[in-house]
Image 1 (cartoon, rainbow, N blue to C red):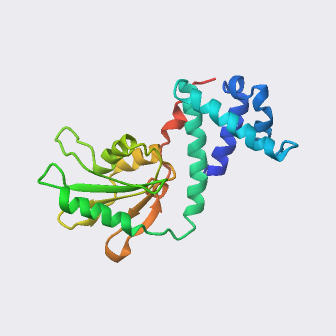
Image 2: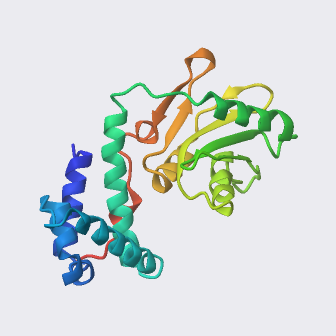
Length: 224
């Protein structure tokens, strides 16, 4: 089985050997690449910070306009998050009860009839709590978790830390459906999800909900 470390190593090889070599292996990024892949530090400690800042500025300016670079960055992020998730599975995860209460409040006060029966709450990386409800429709209306992704983006929250869904009529915490699990993983590979019932609620990495999952980003790079 390929581990997160193995995926990261593969991404490293792609970074040096595939098309991004023509962009990210420019002379000004050589020292940073050596530091990242080989652990070779610049002679001046402050040099690393300067290189990282210059690279981040360059990458942010080009990621949204260059689909290949965007896909590469996504692959590297997925590999990094998978490595973090592997470590998380061996640790007891804190349960964000404030998040559960926020979702339960929305489910109790905002869900009405058959169109809105589920509420979701997520904590962004900056600590904010974002909430949403599902929008049922026979053509396949989005679940509360998917509505929340858009609601979070509309508020400028593009990185989520933890998410939970709660049903109306005091149904308590409800685990995400299969589609939501895949979407949540693709958007936030390091996301934590609260699942379980009553006093057995627990926090698990989204990767635990999709073992051996399909990684969309793995299939987007152009063949060399």
